[in-house]
Image 1: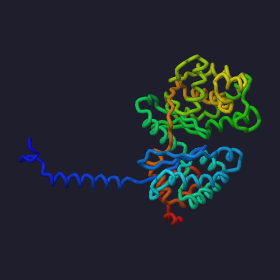
Image 2 (image 1 turned 90 degrees about the vertical axis):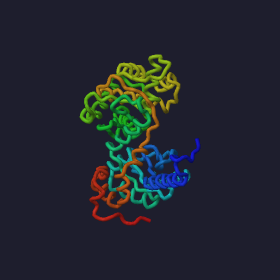
Image 3 (image 1 turned 30 degrees about the vertical axis):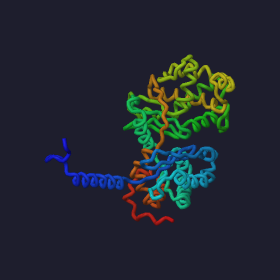
Length: 374
């Protein structure tokens, strides 16, 4: 059948229609905000641009100077360099709007001295051209659960995810979350101070005597007292981060002679594994697990922390599913963070007065627009 019959489309009309669709698509694409975001945690920075798959990163140790009482000053030159160079080296659009999200280490810095942090961030913005907003724990939890849903899909069968970072931990759900500056390294340091009298990281927790294990369990119980109030009854968890997926879970699997990786972890299994390793030397534990002593040094504190979390939430099964979760998708979609970047002087003023709660206030209530920045 000929394409030029009485009911066939007019070729000129088809051409014009196609051009219209292309123009509409270009306009729609142009309407989408071009954004660059920086996920700034306790151990480094990861960058991302809207619509781009690349997520380049660099390592910067923020926790060591913070826990030593030196603040973030010594890390600022490396931070400014990363904020400038990560987008440049990876071909990000220099015209995109930029914002940095400061997470666990930056919350700790605000807790220690919010005026000093605000001054440091002011200098960082002038040096690197990026406004860094300190993101509250609750908001980070919302980023995390949405990201986990996207990555796990139907594999996410629990109401919450458990994400243990270096500086903070969060139990994040769609509508409720618990978070604390109580991640792997900060919890380990707290145990070092309580049991060994020093804050060395990592310290030698092994061998641990029964009374020391009881002290550690009582300490984690006190630290996690707010979990039950923050989460709904019956909340279930999927552990997604390496302290569990590559530390605790493999140790439990080895103890129970499981040749396959664990998909769930019970309190009984965890307790038996913990009590076996606690009394051993670090060298013995590392040898049995086939890992380096510097990695095995955190195993006991990690197991005590996970045991405490299961007790605090009443969970009998902790699901295991490692994913490479970042805060970038949530941050790139966070209109409030970019509004604060556009009126940054006002944000810094509120950070000095309110600490991390400055994020939750309304940028539209700022009296004057931000001063032009060089």
